[in-house]
Length: 328
Ligand code: UDP
Image (cartoon, rainbow, N blue to C red):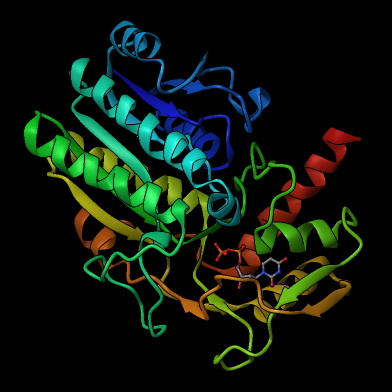
């Protein structure tokens, strides 16, 4: 029995591969290495370099390795890029996922875990979001992920196949053991940008908007440690293997931090000030998004262990230093 991880050379995927190996699982990665890094994949996992929509390659891999579960991370993830190139996002995230789901059905793979996103929800009043909240994505990125959730729903109704779609909130941090982290170049995410500023990879950073209706005027997000997120996938996998039915579950901590609170944590952990400049609002940023993740806790016993901002920042900073050494 082997777990097939798509996008295993990427940020969240590489953490998943380490987590599975730590648990004694056999792993095969399918990744075309467009944004991921071969060095991010541990030697104990087989790497098949190729496209998730290459059905001959994927189905022969599933059969050859006796795959019983797919964990699907491969895809494009930059919201503004999806606005500029919606058809590219529908191709990468929706059309290729359709091919992958079909391959799983054809090869008789019974379990499928999908990397979905809080971007499937519309804006709300800042109250913790439950899974039943209306799905009104505000970007092609969110829509492309929601369409894949719908394909999974219908495929699971028609075929002997069950899925779990995990809707991630703001994923950050790095492997506590320092084996992998977020390595993507040109990253735009707040904690990554703040850590790049703290390690002098960029001279300054900006805060996008200080006039939001929040206590300090900056946006509030639910930052989830990538290792806790990988743990959620592992538990979801165990639940499916134990006969669990298809499920959609949020992955966040239910606690929100403002942009200023995050930057303060980085200052605190690194022990020096950062050059932070106030800038205007970034288009499309909702004031506040926080998860209600009771379902993940109830359905597969997820218990966050690294839900502390200073811990997240410590791990993210440590990885940023390691990357600096690797690239110098
Ligand atoms: N943000 C910021 N400066 C940056 C990057 C992000 O002020 O350099 C803000 C952004 O406007 C948002 C929050 O940080 O309010 C989280 O943004 P991020 O891109 O990390 O994740 P998102 O919530 O957009 O998926």
